[in-house]
Every structure is written in structure tokens, then in C-alpha cells.
Length: 155
Image (tube, rainbow, N blue to C red):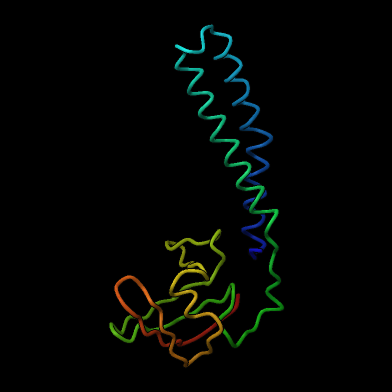
């Protein structure tokens, strides 16, 4: 079971609907057109259409599986004093004295450029359940990071 924010659930649903209702019918038309051009064994257009069809079907199935095994999380039931899913956490790396701020999200919402890290990442997992002022230790490929939690907010 994965938990998603309402926004991400809606984004995945919209992408799935777009693929099913707009992209896939176009792919089917392209495949039928390429197939009508004759010998399939020497037809690059047909092979390309089949590749695109397979890729589209694969993406549709992947998104369906995400939605099937996901639930929208209600931010009202999340603890406000501990790091949890959807928390925005400001912390300091004690080795480098660098301050960072990330939101803890599900793996399907992770986006480092937007400041979102997965709760399953080494840093996300180390922060989960901690309170402001506590030190979290994250085991990363370069060693162990000691992170002091400065503040926790829930949007």
C-alpha cells in the first residue's frame, strides 16, 4: 500500500485518462495504417508503431497498478510534531553545517528539484518519526550523515 497526496493522485489519474482516451486510440490508428502498408517483416513503420504501442500499454498498466495499490492520505490525521508523510522538514547536516529543507513524500511523488524526497530514501527513512531538535542518522553510500531536525511543518 502506497499513500499519495491528493494532488499526485489526481495527476496520475489525469495522465492515465489521457493515455487511455487520447494517446492509445491514436497509437492504434497508426498501427493499423502501418500494417496496411504490406509485408510486416520489412516494414520499419509497423515495427515502430508496435514499439510505441507496447510502451503505451506498459505505461497504462503501471499507472493502473499505482492507483490500484494507493490511497490518498488525509493530512488532518498526520502528526504535526513528528516527521511523517507530507511533512516539510528543515534540518542541518552536522558534518558540513549545511541546512536543507525537503518534503517527505511517497516514492511516486519524489522530485528532488521540487524539494521532495521519498520516505524510502536513506535520508527520508532516517527522518521519519523524529521530532524537532532530534538527531537522525542516515546511512548513505558515502557514509553516515548526522542530521539535526530544526523544524517540521505540515502543509
